Image (tube, rainbow, N blue to C red; front, top):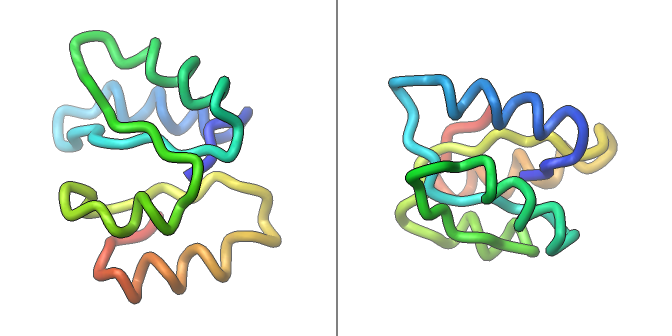
Length: 87
């Protein structure tokens, strides 16, 4: 959730991981989602503008929250309530 500066760095870590499958990308800026999806060579992650829509996706098991810090609390609580693992 969030693919700005920090989110893009974390996206790179997820893409390198052999233990994680990237199924979705979320950012309120559609152009940021599209740019992030371009980095996902050989993958077809879904794109979301609203994190609540992403949390409703059964394919999503865990989320990485990389938004401004003041947004983390509500997003983390919503993710836990949606039965998602949170980083």
